[in-house]
Length: 463
Image (cartoon, rainbow, N blue to C red; front, side):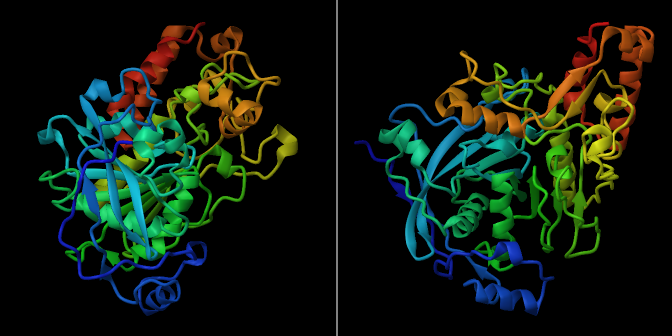
């Protein structure tokens, strides 16, 4: 059986490996002595401490194919369209007193000269997806940012996919936080996979389950540092989560979706105060997963039409503002929250809905301000399972379809009669969409990279 290429080991930092961290859910202390004491109780150092840099393999090119954790991209907004390369490495070190070998995937411009110096990092979702990259790919790549994906859960599905390539991977429970710290510090160093390309700032993102991984890491963020005693992650970007984000000493932008807003959403308030820098961005119309481009939902295994709301266009708004906050010190705008009436009897939703069935409040967009459909959670699976289901759905059967449909949004298109009643004719509708899009771009709530996608959706509407 083939083995990975020999590891390159940089000089070790002063600190040794650290114990696992497990009490993140209860961590909410402000910076200071109380936080240090809590960190010590969790097995963390009492004071900021440099993590050891793990060893990095040469690029892994075989045997056999690489596990593809980011197959879902909007047409024209994939890696080939931006001349991005995807490279895979193995990283070895010690976490929680046990050896590990994990996978690191790097997505960056083929021409290193185009690298912006900003890095989007994420823990791979346990489903095998790099959702944070998929959810922001067009913005991330058009801006020249790099994206790195770190395996922090069991490698079983990678080994099942290609044992010859991945059988040397070992990641155990309790090692995630040390792995995130050590691999993050490695990425920022000159010994990392970006080589001499200087990393100015790096943020850690998550989606749903991997947002929980992010929150679990935050106590470690308080004390773990690079060998130069700098922050490892300069900001955090949890998405598709309703959990209350603990206060940390770097900015956080959190983006829940309609699925979370319908439940027990966090009440944490926006703040510009150092040590409490925070924004909550709730986009009206957005679902927990991307049902527009997600390859697992094509063809549609759900009972209602898949929502084609472009999740990527609006998750990217949050990442755009977070990078400006951590890199340039530009304070992001505040946004209203989606309104909640807690009454499902009147319209079937805990959200307050307008006359078209779309949420009131939140970050606005042409899809709800100049609507041609109702967008809502939660879809349900068609039973029995459709014959031509996507490979992931087919492999997981009806339960896989139930999971994906439950996490996706659906849409109910308006009739041609209602469209004529609202807009008169298509030309008037298109003018209204473009005018609203111009306003949102000026206000920072829509990014130019997605303008053509949004206008193409409007052009495709059939009156």
